[in-house]
Image (cartoon, rainbow, N blue to C red):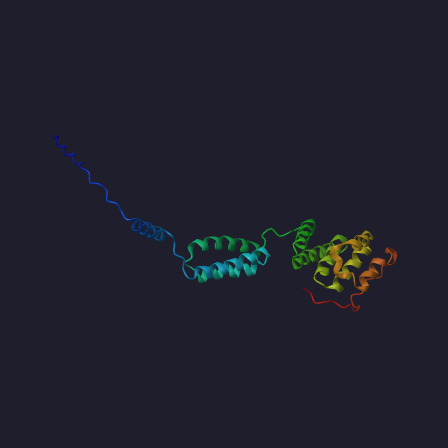
Length: 218
């Protein structure tokens, strides 16, 4: 009978098998340790941050700045979020800061007023146009734009007065005013309709003392 030769033993230790449930548990612990733990204040900070973004989208830069600053002050530990907050806060601060390059000439002020009206910034537009009017009282373009800006603020008396003067200086402004959607708030005003119907040769002098009902300015 042949004897079986003993198999040579390997010098390396054989790996011991690990139960599947132990391996799964170990992997779960590793993943759990790798995931960042959110603080309880994180979601509060995000909520305020999103309110700031909404205000920024509506061009309410002052309100947006206040919200972003409150995130910085109340949630200093949310480092990742604060980087984005500072970015948008800088945008807001640039928007509300005074412009260094203020318009100097009539043309520059008219252009700045046009941009302001298109952007709904009627106070700023009126400020530019008043400077043009003071420097060039017969600038019918500036007077017409003043009428538009005041009309958009529901200030009928001021709007009609400037429009009448603009028409007196240039009768083409009457035809423009008849179809201008920016003067839509004045359509029901009797003095506005009278200004559009009167012939250019009989435009009556502007009487700023006349009583015209003016709605509350926006």
